[in-house]
Image (cartoon, rainbow, N blue to C red; front, side, top):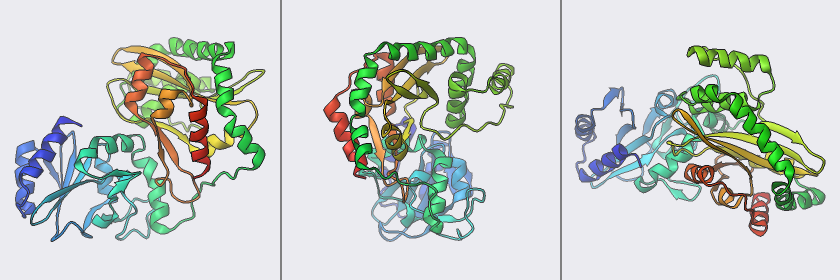
Length: 385
């Protein structure tokens, strides 16, 4: 956990029983040199909102969604001050069930409404929303961000039919899906896997300087999309526009929309049809990268010859540490896969993430091992959702 957040949690516990949110807010602001923005106190490492209630259950209005948007890139903590104890909850957008107050007009292009204390999830995918789990929960949120949560909140708030569709699997498709680990094992051992990695490595080498410049971009989504396009993009003219903007170090990165597809790089071989998702890992950061949409991966794996791979590019300030090409079923990767089943809303099996620390280890010490039985059990679990 960020040391400043740890210090904050210890500070709030030290003042259990203060039973005065205004007094506690002033003490916290003085101790941590916090800036006040209406009801929110913040610094570079966290933002906090103080509320009060007679008990742990509270339905008070906490904050507007538009105000939360400003602080959603750092742990947003709600401290509930009660007579005996100060309770803390992480209230970033990933951990909101819905938007309650004045939210009838909430749309993706119209950020409206506020959330109540009762809208904050007390548990997320089996992880309790308590101070001990702040780092783990925030790493999950970092991989989703505000934009990643907005569609879900609009659907949950206004009961709008979700745009996604659950992939219905027939018997033949199920057989093809469950044979995907065997296909992956065969592909990883083939010369085709090395051919694929050599192609992607050549792109990284060619655009190495631009990748290192892009790695300096703070916005995780923009940074990832740019690096992925440099490596796997198909429009050379657009790639050159991106390169020009990076070299001039301007804020004028051209607007571009990436396909919301499963992978970034498609390659067909005689025996295999591969989709590869390109992921950048900033080695000094611990956030969890997005993995894949569960329905999309099932749909792809239900086709003959399908093999789904990940190509990770490990970056440190000023250098590319390593690149690694691995199957979605690689044992260490599979063990670090987090299924966010309830997050995605109706008509969807959900999405997945990877634990950032596991990716760093894989980049530093590449492995291609696949446990076929464990991979089949994983797929059976996803199919059952």
